[in-house]
Length: 184
Image (cartoon, helix red, strand yellow):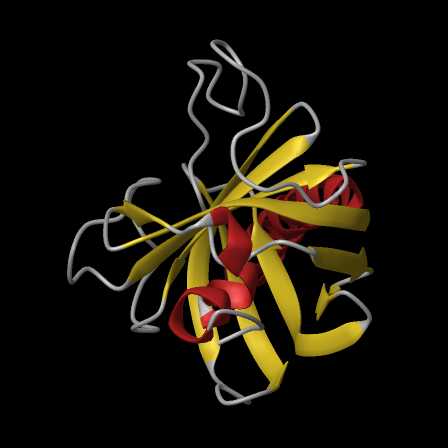
């Protein structure tokens, strides 16, 4: 009887794990391709468009490559947990000053845009997509199929939030804001 209970519990755990894996695979597919960094915000302040002009994010599988023009400025891998609300990702830097550091983040998609809010402190994912002075969060907005743009595109109603404003986010969690280019 005890063995049967253990087998049933293990079966339930495996089914739940498979469902989570399937959800993660579906989410992973959304990230694939080349994305322009179109907006960046840190400490409640939007970065000047010139700080992230010409940045693009290339996602292949679970690998992220951030480039400024043709120069690689950051590389990372990531894992997703789309069962959380907001959805969570863990970005592990593989190249750069933060090499081997894992940064928790949250993400969401809105059409051809993705917003990623990264906690640079590496402790826990942000609770929402806001940045405030001193909270160590960087909000990045990437747009698929867009050329790298200098600031919010269009007038009223433009931008991922639909209110004429875009939220600026950091290329690979912040390097562009600190140095005027690159990844952290």
